[in-house]
Image (cartoon, rainbow, N blue to C red):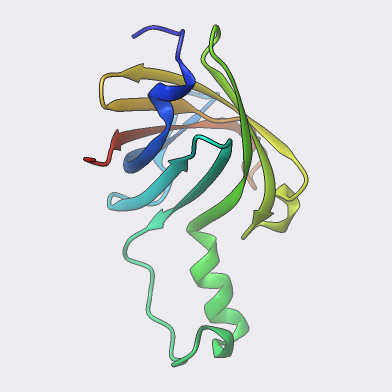
Length: 150
């Protein structure tokens, strides 16, 4: 896998194959469980959007998304990530900066997240920015995506 990635090589739709948290102590955890699902979109005009999470999240009781209970919202959001904004790709290093404008997790809004891409044909492996878990352990996520057929 080469580090150098052209902008044209990432433009399009990508479907999530796996999302694994890699902790500094060597532990690996499936970030959204064994059946994670998601899509990542890079457009030619520099827009990025990502939605991903557990595919087995419980159904809420409300008939309208605006009417779920606070507990249902919390449960649904705990294993789901969604954001959109713009991106800047460094073609030489394979690093891409996601400049997040809107996010389910509001703390990411107005922030930038660094991603390292490794492209192999129609598959891309993305190493996400480091994070700290609620128990204080440091980790990063590695996400594997396959290009959606055109």
